[in-house]
Length: 175
Image (cartoon, rainbow, N blue to C red):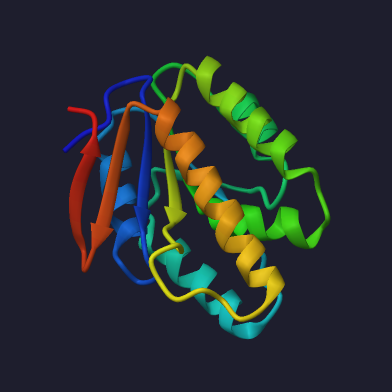
């Protein structure tokens, strides 16, 4: 499986589904520069350990950028022909936007606009959170709704969509 030069891919899956590993392997099939845009923030020791584990999984080809909020700007600033950008993950980015009371529709529109003009290949990782039970609090329900809408909007504009379950990627869109 491969993402062709200049194409955009969306990799969806649940927690610990293997989506990040699959997305990284897709990116590493390319010959050009590899840019990892990390949206996570280490607010506690457990998250710091998760981030460190992800960093240790990447080899020396990778250049890592920390981008918890301004994702469209980061993609626009670092994209170039022959490069592959891996964004991991959109649901953490969405959490950052929600908790910071940012304009989510504007941020999503900016992200989609940056993807449409990018000359780099871009692989986006996002959690699928809508297949479980309905959350018992308003913030969690709002997050689930926003994540679902984000994934739908992106899936409609990207060339390739995969869903990863138990480490097994299923192609939903593209060739």
